[in-house]
Length: 115
Image: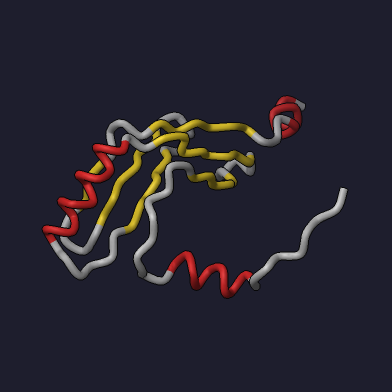
């Protein structure tokens, strides 16, 4: 298997992703996380409802036209309940129709805990 070299450095990628600018709204998003019990998960935002998301962005922009809008995904301690929120400096809106999926990446920790 051959890996391709990245076209930009990690610093440049971070700057592009995290600095405020006009960007498209993602329709999918994945995050790798490690829980307090050291289990690794993939949290994947499968879909955003287009109409709900557009309305949320419009409402946030009306509330504070010049502020940055950020997407937050929160997970409870048991990794059973998820929340997707769009937020700016004045307001936050929960995206009720967002579909999230959770994948356990290392089932070997289950065996270690049973020994």
